Amino acid sequence: MVSRNRSQVKDHLGSKVLNHPELRNTKATEYMSHEEKYRYNLSRATAMLKLIDEEGMDVNEISKVMSHTVSGFTTPDGNPLAVHQVMFVPTLMNQADDDQVSRWLGDVFNGTIVGTYAQTELSHGTFVRGLRTTATYDPASRTFDLHTPDVSAAKWWPGGLGTTANHAVVMAQLYTDGQPRGIHPFMVAIRDRETHRPLPGITVGEIGPKLGQNTLNNGYLLFDHVKVPRENMLMRNARVNEDGSYTKPSHQKASYGTMVFTRVAIALDTVDALQIAATIAARYSIVRRQGEPRDDGQEPQIIDYQTQQLKVLPHIAACYVLRASTARLWEHHTHVTSEVRGGDTALLPELHATACCLKALVTQDCSEAIEALRLSCGGHGYMTASRLPALYAYATAGATYEGENTVLLLQTARYLVKQAGGSHAPPAAGSAVTYLSRPADDTPFAVGSPAAYVAAVGRVARGRVTEVAAALQADRQTMPEADAWNQSLVQLVAAALAHGRYFVVREFAEVVSQQSSSRAIQQMLQLLFSVYLAHAVSRAEGDFITYGGLTPSDIRLNRRHLLRLLAELRPHMIPLTDAFDLPDRLINSTLGAWDGDVYRRMFEQASHSPLNTDEVPASFHQAMLRSKL
Ligand SMILES: CC/C=C\C/C=C\C/C=C\C/C=C\CCCCC(=O)SCCNC(=O)CCNC(=O)[C@H](O)C(C)(C)COP(=O)(O)OP(=O)(O)OC[C@H]1O[C@@H](n2cnc3c(N)ncnc32)[C@H](O)[C@@H]1OP(=O)(O)O
Ligand SMILES: Cc1cc2nc3c(=O)[nH]c(=O)nc-3n(C[C@H](O)[C@H](O)[C@H](O)COP(=O)(O)OP(=O)(O)OC[C@H]3O[C@@H](n4cnc5c(N)ncnc54)[C@H](O)[C@@H]3O)c2cc1C
Image (cartoon, rainbow, N blue to C red; front, side, top):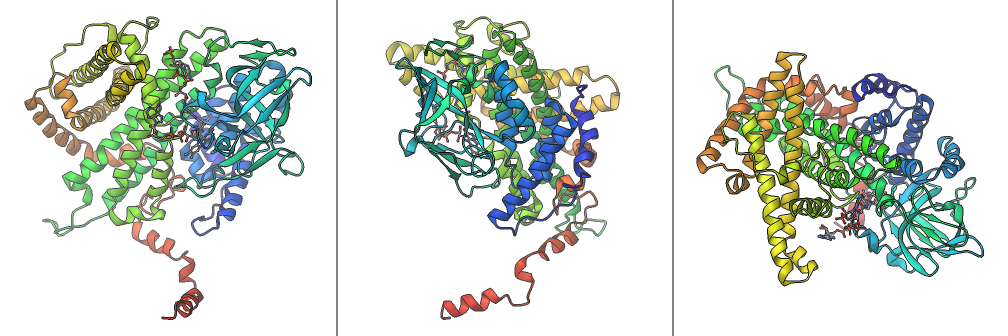
């Protein structure tokens, strides 16, 4: 099938999903039980999977229909097949060898095999090398013995594991010839394909309610000496031969590949959630009027308060800036993956560093922004029907899963300090870290010049990285490595975030400079960029004085500049959010519909409360009688 770019995909497939016979009629799920919600979301997830199969979608198309924009409509409480689609299938495609792919993929695509990615355990998520599920090879029977040594090593969290999947890619410590060989992936049947009952030796179930995403169907899993055929270790990278001899992978972290992919997907996707939240808050801020009437006799629209502009508008700019850099990362990931498949792993370390950093920066920025946008809607933003709480719950999960953000930023920092100290292979042409080995960009700071802001963001990144690299180097002379590293953790995280910010603004500077189809569009992109940059400086004024070359007077000027820019952006707020092209059914918010009919919608949703069915609910009398009041 011919590959389509992302925006074409949206036009082509968006309407297919919205008009699909099994998807077009939605139900409110707020008052459903846990089980009813699961059934509703699972049946819709299954319809989506069939659609993906029928359409023969490629990975770009799948990324669109699995994106939060669409999946918030198809599976509003979390997709129990998300991990199957986003992690299980890609792991098979990239880590199974050709024989294994042909053995399993037919059954995966016809829906006979439904899988999950079972890595995290009760006592270990972050420290993957510390996982304690074992896979011990026995050359006599040519099987692996999968075993959970105690309850703390139970797999805990995998999405879809609870009650949905019948297979799992299990990440386990491999032992051959009595030697530990590190973490490797194994394809394991966990439930019977016909009856769906757990197979012998398997204990499996669902972990219980969470802050949000309650039908992701996260589960637990324990193995009691479960025998798995040798052919079920995924063998594209490392191999175990029949006699138990072991062949190492071409890259020591080849088995971590799925995590890199998912981090890239999460970074891209969390911006979708921000776009929805920004659209809701923008529309509500126009409709909502409150305060002393003005000359025209009307109470002011809340967006005309300067404070409200600061709460809403920078996040609209962030949608544009973060969308550009995450889309670029997605393309770069595709390129590097094909190089790695061809045996060239040279670009992998930097891809890993960038994916870690962007996943962390984007999920942190987006969850903070969505919470700010929720607060900007006052009391009504607290209601489930505004959709803002669920959007927050979604974005903040992204700060934890697929690598807790602090830990991922430390991976990036490790790469950066090595680059700054010259102890890593020099970066390839076009690398995002060449600035570390060049003199600082001394473009003088000038309010109103995006290029000057970008240079200052670069000086902050360079200053943060080189400073912490030097501190680390000095500490290494006087204390053990682990202590020296721990001594610098806070500064390392700040350095990685500063690097991420520089990456993001350079990417957007390129987007603005390359935009040539319309002068008006270019001016609008420049305005959005200026808002993003001025806001970035206002959020980290200390850094810009310490490392960025700004003076206290520049900081004061920037504060005024930001507020002026916000006033300039305000008339464009609605067209800029309309441009996200989100139909009401995808936004699904009482506050964020296109027609602005907020108050009618709020009453309409209240009418669904089961407590309003009878004038006096039976439960009231029952509870009063029991409490002897
Ligand atoms: C198609 C679909 C598209 C869109 C759909 C939309 C969105 C999807 C949205 C939602 C998805 C749904 C649900 C999400 C479900 C989430 C699932 C999970 O959470 S799965 C579990 C994830 N777990 C983690 O991420 C664990 C985090 N920890 C780690 O990754 C590792 O422990 C570590 C922190 C990287 C450390 O590893 P280790 O201890 O082994 O390594 P060192 O730190 O010692 O480093 C040594 C060396 O290796 C390099 N390195 C580490 N990792 C990688 C890598 N992945 N690739 C390349 N290189 C790597 C590291 O940089 C060091 O290099 P050196 O300095 O030595 O040169
Ligand atoms: C909704 C959801 C879905 C998930 N889905 C899956 C799934 O499908 N499959 C799967 O395998 N897993 C899944 N997970 C698990 C997830 O990947 C882990 O929870 C995540 O990687 C964080 O690990 P942790 O829970 O061990 O956190 P911890 O590491 O225990 O984090 C706790 C604190 O310790 C700090 N910390 C830990 N190590 C360090 C360090 N080295 N340096 C500094 N600080 C440190 C962290 O910064 C954090 O503040 C899911 C989790 C969630 C919430």
